[in-house]
Amino acid sequence: MLVLHYTGMQTGEAALERLRSEEAGVSSHYLVEEDGRIFRLVPEERRAWHAGVSFWRGERNVNHASIGIEIVNPGHEFGYRPFPEAQVAAVLELVADIRSRWTIEDRNIVGHSDVAPNRKIDPGELFPWKRLAEEGHGLWVEPAPAPGAALAEGEEGAGVFAFQAGLTRLGYDCPPSGRFDADTTTIVKAFQRHWRPERVDGIADGETRARLIALLRLAA
Image 1 (spheres, rainbow, N blue to C red):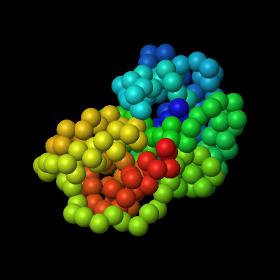
Image 2 (tube, rainbow, N blue to C red):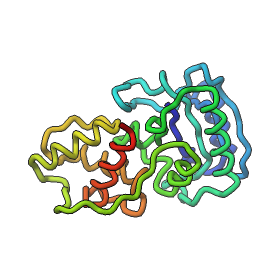
Image 3 (cartoon, rainbow, N blue to C red):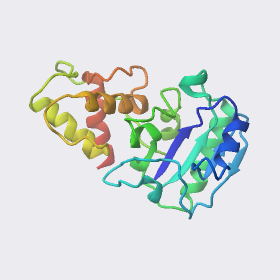
Image 4 (cartoon, rainbow, N blue to C red):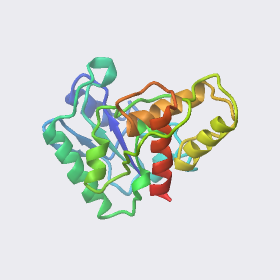
C-alpha cells in the first residue's frame, strides 16, 4: 500500500524535526517539502509509524503493509492551502519511483483519511487525487449521477445496506448494517475527500453513489 498524508504542522522544519524524533513515536518513509525537496527518513523495506490505528481492504495493521509519504502542508488546523506545483510534481515523481520497486495496486494508493476516517482528514480535499490518477497512480472516475434519493444519517433499509457493502468492498471498514449511523457518515466524508472533493458533507447523494459504483467496477 501507499498512504499519503499532510503534515498538519505550521512549518516543514517542525514536521521534519518531529518525524526524526525518537520521543515523538511517529515516522514516515518520506517527507516532501513545498518547494519539492524530498527527504528519505525510513528505508522502504522497514516499517514506519505513519498510519496508526488503521484499516484498508482487510488489513488492520496498515503500518505493516505500506509506505508512507508526508506532504508538508499546515492542514485544516493551521491554514489548509493548495499544494504548490513543485511539491505536487515531486510527489508524482516519488510515487512513480516507489512503484517501480514495489507491486502496489491503484486501489491501494490512498490517503490517511481513507485508512483512519474516525481520526484523520488528511491529505484532504485539496490534494490533487485526479491528477495523480491521470499520471497512472490511483483510481479516479467521473460518472453521471445515479438516480434516487440521497441517503443520510438516520436512514435505514436495503439501500443503506448496499451502499455500506460497496464502501466495504472498496476498502473501508464499514460492515453493512442497513443503518446509516455516525460512523457511516464519517466514512462517506472520507470517501468524498478523496473521490468527490467538491462536496464533503457525509451525504450519499446520487453522484457520490455513482462514483462508488464506478470505482468498484474499475477496481474489480
